[in-house]
Length: 433
Image: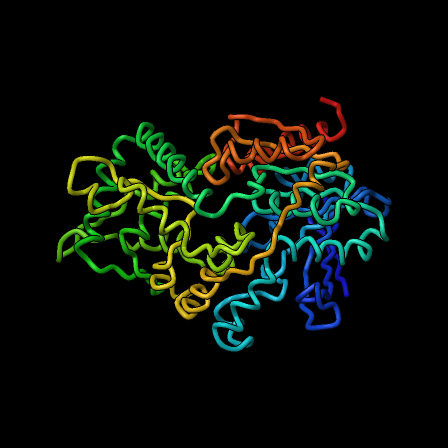
């Protein structure tokens, strides 16, 4: 079933597909995938090659563009684009606190969620590709976690690809989650230090907010318990090109005077809850560490355990001295499932996933070493979300991969740099640079 409609400069078609929940059991349960086809209006009747876009995450649906902004503008110069809502996201049989109870109890839910990693996403792509392209290969553009999926694609089904373009998404091929976070916390600390150099007034503002949260119970309008650790997690925005500025504007009007003394303003609380809530992307919290699981070792709340190795992130200790409060970044912690009402019913499910020991490999080093698909990857010089050293090691492990290492952009470079970033990477896949 499909529906076609128009926006300025583009023709859009909503498409739905049925795929197996477990590709190892093709005759078993199925789920629905949704994707939006986009083509330039002037090319609506032309036979063009296809580009499939895999969004970052995990847990986010594809961009809901209006017209042809950012990288899409360049892509539409030569492709039909398929914006795929990866399984469990957007309109693709969504996974959340409302739908997961249909599976049964926490163990059944955890078993279900084990099918929502990059290997299953690749199998989904290969299932729908013949239906979309008539059997022709297509180019994959993977942003962040979408890049992780693209590397899985090169490992599992390179025969389906014309080329692969990766932006901020070259994963370590064999690092445990502990290795990932052990490398991440120093990067996060550098980003926080850079923020405070840009906005030194925010040192005292952040300390004041943290002190208030250590001495007061604050519940946001949506029921989210704003603890000091939750406040620190706002640092996740510092990995984006405009993240430091956004954090600064958030902090500058945190308090208002009331008859009972200073309180966190309604406006501040409203903005914070929009930033912190996982209601729109619970899958991100549920399987974020699972995307690093590839062996018999559990992830076991890796980010929380590794954080203990970096005591400078302890808010109480920071406030007891004169040092700045450190924000955190892309880390998932067990307390999130107590704070966020969108996650609370899933706490036991998350615990079972953290304890799981039967993760299968996501990448094939031997096959990547023999790769014949043209591949280009943007590697951001000090990416807060994906370790640059890990990314470059992986780049060296994929035969023929060409990198563009740049400090012009942060992790969201494909959004901020738009057509220029995609144009550079496509040229690299064609040996034009």
